[in-house]
Image (cartoon, rainbow, N blue to C red; front, top):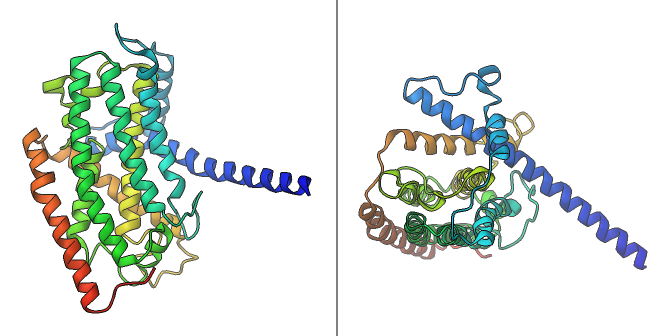
Length: 338
């Protein structure tokens, strides 16, 4: 009996490890080539070539950048807390990867298909601020600390609106399970009836990831690159990878909550012809293109404009739309029963 349980637990452990690798390895490759994708798209927008020397069409550029970072020296500022200084980028990158445990890339294809997946995601995204605060404090630099405070205030401000948006989606779907939320959009993607919430969520996601035009935490003209100004080599690379992994995560959440996840936008196309995972990846790529497009197009906001948008526009609008949606579903008897 003990041998049976041992083999059962071992098999479950091996299966979990394989499922984790099946998510993490493509994610790391995707993060590497997202940098290439961004530089190419911005190059086209700004009428220049982008990476085009390292390998055919510059395709080996991400690996060249990774090798450069691996062989550079990690410099610790005088007076810095070395343990926390090293731990901060690990926390940021680790959380960005850990969040993918509950992301279903197809029907039932998730490392952990738990019933409270959306709460897990919200909890992980809320913890991301700790890595930034620790980095700013442990660097023993006034510029890094100011950048960390800016980023913390920004992330907390926009998480409130994102929370109301997520609650609105949950009311419509009647479930906290991400797989069920996608299946609830079989007939109509939530981006259509909840269009204002879709826009608020995506823009808040841009602010959450500290991307332009909300990159106030990295304001080079004011605070010299913000909370990671003292970082170099692989510690800087982990922050860099964490930011791009979070971009992919926000795009995946937008796809799952509003764009039907792996569901085909063309009902007449057979599922066997275009697998659901392909549709899921295509939708993520479209969201990532908008991330890059916004960065290449819009100037950085002032900090007061950033906070006013979050607290005076997004918060009341998301709260009002939540009340309207709940009232509409209650009046017409459309509230789903979880």
